[in-house]
Length: 525
Image 1: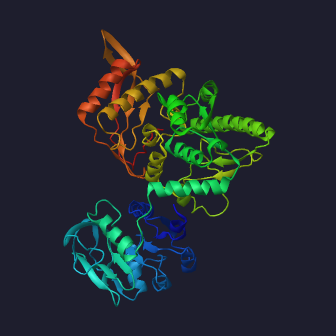
Image 2: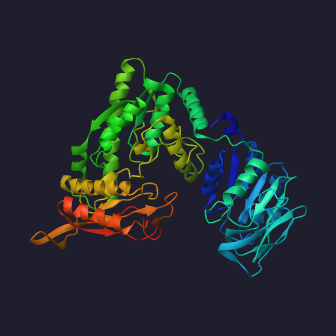
Image 3: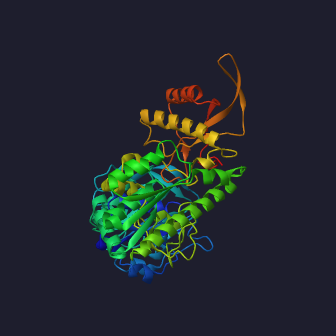
């Protein structure tokens, strides 16, 4: 993330669509830096960011609806390249003096578009007929003056337009979704050719720039990091270690709720690959004691979070005290905040606050740290790319999202050492077989759940058993906001079920969750 890229972002103006972050991600995939800003931001404030281009997102309402967000024409007259999508397209039309009307013919989902590649910047080199993803009730019936109409659909005579001289472009559909066949090509044509932005947002450039940024912030100061072993904290730690070396100390709290092999993965593989200085705190018994008798999921989460804070607090106090005695106080705390966290918390305006999260949430006020958030400009896929560039082990980089409370919230019922052992063994089998089947990159996440308070009759050996069911919850998703259950091949499911019921005591039944999100969540709680 070079200074040049940061200083000239592509601004994605969020009109309230669910896809604003997705648009920003697609821009990043085109190797161009982007940021999401609210539609309430003034034109002056947008221009103060010195944007290389502006993209107007879709929105949930008609441009004629009461209270619908409008577009200040001053943005379109500022000389900045602008690309409108769906609602943003219609807002452009209104601001430029064209006509948007409720024609009575809406278009939703897959729609056939006819484009004009000849002389078009957006559609150059693409077929005349292509499938696009629509979601509109109103339609543009008259293009603004000076605009060349370059696409039509059955329900929209003006489905796209462009004015290369003024660098103003728009499409009625959603090019950011995968259902639009040439959506990424259209976006790249706008960014690279229409706006003339270089494609230099790459993992190596990002690492180089972030390392420089951390060095500038930290100087000769000491840094502390709570290392969970997840992707975010691991990559953040590796990045800071690359920047300041032994000035960083990582604390790994083993709460006993990890999956099989994950403690060793952090303590051995991660340390060997990155060279970080690691302090391990064994708090397994402490967490089990705190969880005794708890069955409510939220109560378990709060108990785990509270214990984590106290354990990390003590470790931090010990390290801070030791460092202060040496005359090198610990001044900084690393946090794996990602860009979606920043956007969802209001854009990161104002003072930085430690997230209410299991790892470093709610540290006492007397432990005063300055936050170091090296990943706060990155999406999850970019974090993984940076991790690979830094040499973080692939097993950690490509690790499925794992809840902070770990297996504690994948046991339905009280958490005990025996139940943890059962779930850990079943989970290890499922992960091993899914990996062997080559499904790791297809599956976003596969929670394995123990229904500890349920027993059902089974037949094993010469008699009946009353064992627990294990639930498999494989899902596919891009960002976990929505998800669909993954169609795992029957032979793979059969192998997992057979192995779990053969190898894991107390389990005599394996079931598959085939619910999408919504209505179901990914985790079982």
